[in-house]
Length: 571
Image 1 (cartoon, rainbow, N blue to C red):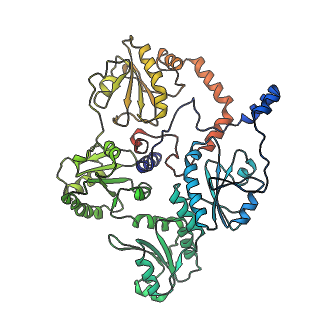
Image 2: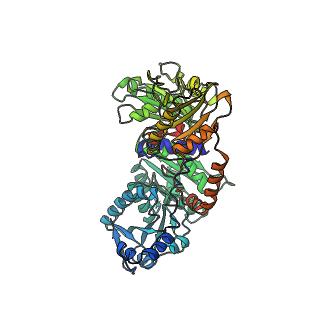
């Protein structure tokens, strides 16, 4: 499940941007709270006296006045109640100044705030420095950053957690849905027809009572979904028009089969889970065009196998292949998700990831989300039969995955750091006469760039050693079947004699790396003891850091990113 989550995030990032995520780096804890900074400043002021007073401007007194920064209201303990009383709907971001996730959200949040303010609605966006305003953070049980909560109608006791997309439009849509009238009530066949015809995807609840338990569940789910329009009815005329005999939920859509019915049996109850599953399953097209709009739906799907059809939309014969693919998609509905990717759009990194060029279109790839394994056809002739055969072989577990590799560079062994690719990895790294220390990196990764000069010096230091090789692998272009990498950069030591591979998880400076190598691939005992002592001393800060890691659905909800799940980071 963990791998599936990481892969989904990675694939989603194809469209939502790139960022470098560091894992297993003991030198840089994950955005740890600066827990001792206040004490340090206090001690310094005692020692420096007037110098501290001159160096820092006095803090502004907090009053009930509400100030704004880029259209975002700045709230604190003294003006929080006033804001709740003056604005009907307020989304509040609880942030930490040092939090990278918060910093990346800031311009998006400000843009949404500006647009909502411009519209002159009763909806506003605000923020609270949760480190400074600890009392508010404790009151609202803020456990990670950023945390977003919606306060409605002055109610301070029961805010609603934000569940929308953390994009400008995602925030605006979610707020409008939450502040709106809710699901429409269809009281006639005519009003129902008009409502359904007006939208691409419409979810209608047919209930005997609009105040019953099932109707309440339906209303609650409708408030969190912005990808469809919702309505409910108890009108016999509407039931009759759409041939609904008992309590049901019907999803109407302007594609594929046109509608999907979820009829409740006498002993079956409608709940959030089964209603959400029904909507997720039926609101997607049989073949989903790959786009930013559809990305979240694609990669949040519970279906773990994705069949990708790469076509050139300017070639009519390739567009015609969609009919064959649609036939196959019907056969594997609920087992495999089918996605079309137009190679004429700006998706060069997508093509690179799957080892596809624009000239290869039309072509097919299947990706297994749980493992990151990829499969392709053994023939270039794409037909309904050949596509169905590939999909069935993947489902049966008989298809053979393929792994990307670059060609071996002519000068791969000329420098102090040897360049490994998929084609020469095993012959070098698994050489029983050598101790091979390998860095698995991504070209875009800032942490890898920081390590680069140190790794080069390490290679130079051991260049004259016949039994030690310092190497590196670009994991965005080379996949090694036998190696699992959980983040960038990842360092692994392959000892001579075929011994067990060692994951390096210590400091990444030249001295520590050298001690590790000189000691045969383990840290000297005194070094390990020192690190353990440091861990004990910093235990509280590490715990705070762990608690503060953003656990949202965003592209960076994890501090790790597997190289077989690096589509997000690559793009």
